[in-house]
Image (tube, rainbow, N blue to C red; front, side, top):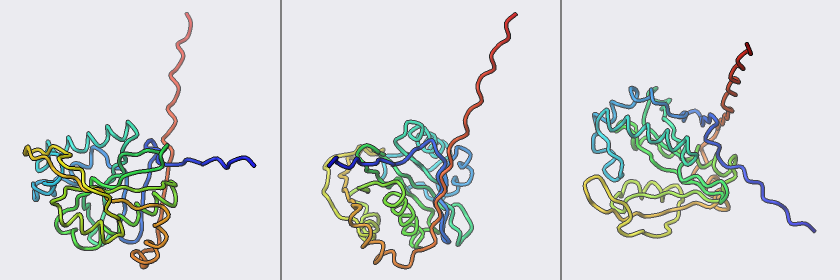
Amino acid sequence: MAKKKNIITGLNTAQRLTLENERSLLRPIKETDLKALLYIAEEQPNLLQYSPSPFGNKKALKDYILKALEQKELGTRYPFIIYDKKTQGWAGATSFGNISNNNQRVEIGWTWLGKKHQKTGLNRNNKFLMLSYAFEEAGFERVELKTDSRNAQSIAAMEKIGAKLEGTLRSHTLMTDGHRRDTVYYSILKEEWPKIKETIFESYKEIKFKVTDPPVPEPEPVPEEN
């Protein structure tokens, strides 16, 4: 009997992907979203203190968004802007990253929320949307998460959604202040997702996924011969 061929789906970063339920909407971030998110950077300049990305002013935020869009073009990252339906406002950003369709793995991270949106259940809801899409729609076998070993809040959040600690990479990432951080890695496997969904995310329902192919460019006109 012929061996069944694995069907690889994964993420196509050229497509427009939105994730949504009654609590939040995640849509592709755009350069023009700078205006909607700038208040967070200005009010909380140290929000990304455990990230290697500069933050805290208009230029740093613009560079952050442009870098995310460059990585999207390369097919390695899918950045979203987060809309909080409860407060009816733009709340922050998050991403699928380190996309490896061939190996059927992806990372969820690059997540930050304005202060008023933290500890409200919004982050966990967004993780539910992203994990559901990663395992149930994109067909990934593994989702990775990582953070600075000093970031107790992020570590607690990952453990509360059922992620398992895999280990620590020592002196792993150079930070903007010159510190070399130890990075802790967590993961969730596809085989673990059904139980996590039925327990930790038992009350989370009504998910909508929408994937739209990019428009096909019009062909260049052929010049008429004289």
